[in-house]
Length: 391
Ligand SMILES: [Zn+2]
Image (cartoon, rainbow, N blue to C red; front, side, top):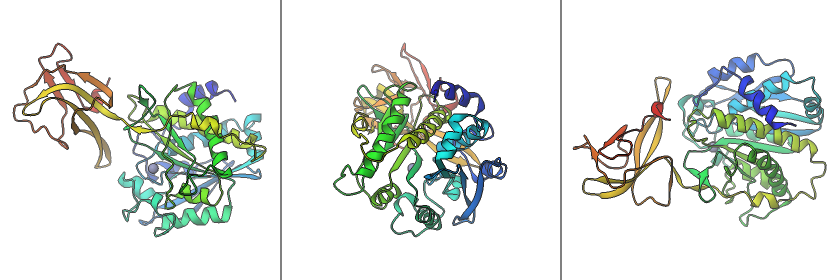
């Protein structure tokens, strides 16, 4: 597979009707209703607030790959990428690369496991339960739907598709963790079992491909064992499972760049699965060369600004994503004030000890909205923190 060609294809051919961060069942239902005959769509059940949860099946091969996205409602990037994958398969269904995949594998994808959370733009479902901590309790209808699906299917591989916040970085000096992966643990000791090893080798393949596009910006997620997480539970049942975390590409708060990278990763993992002739002899070592995710980024980092009472400090600002009348806003709020030299900003400015002006009565504390800073500094005298003014 030529991933440069695939990248070019994606930029011009991705599904145009879904974009940005706020993706709901109203966006994807028309797409599901109009999928070509290559795909069969079936409603698996309904969410707490009675929204449908559907699976999309394609391919006829013996290897079964089960994936689901948006089990956290506000993590929509992988849902967008799944619909792009569907379009790519259909657009290229005469080509060998695609027929090989369809003849070898059967793909079962659930493009929005938590439609209520998607609608409310929340991580949790309508009962305020985190579905990725409900794998044992199975207290929510969405959790039962997923459990029934994997119990009946007995998939060979599972893909747990998520999105991560802008706070994650990798490497030294740190870069944004644009995409991160995990082959979850299946026991407290984090034993590298055969099932984990397979997940690791699949991740190593995706990482190798991604390095061409985003060097040093792929991360490895924390592998602490938690049986309440779906991935850990599946791995515990010896089903190789890969967690995807679609992260922040600098400047791209709509996550359209990351969408492309997730699309490429999905095609790459499908190809790896097809070629993984033997489940033995898979090497896990390249996986451990991927740097671990660390929480080291803020959306904005204003260094060495002189504030009343506090003196010269660093100021971190994070966007708070809030839904208002169906529109998603990115509200810049003070997140932390202090010595933040260990941290990075996706956008940074250094005021070199100068004080802000025109903010005499401003309440410099965490949680306060801040949209603009002005100083007498020779550096940017007016610094906007509004998303629409970025770059
Ligand atoms: Zn998530």
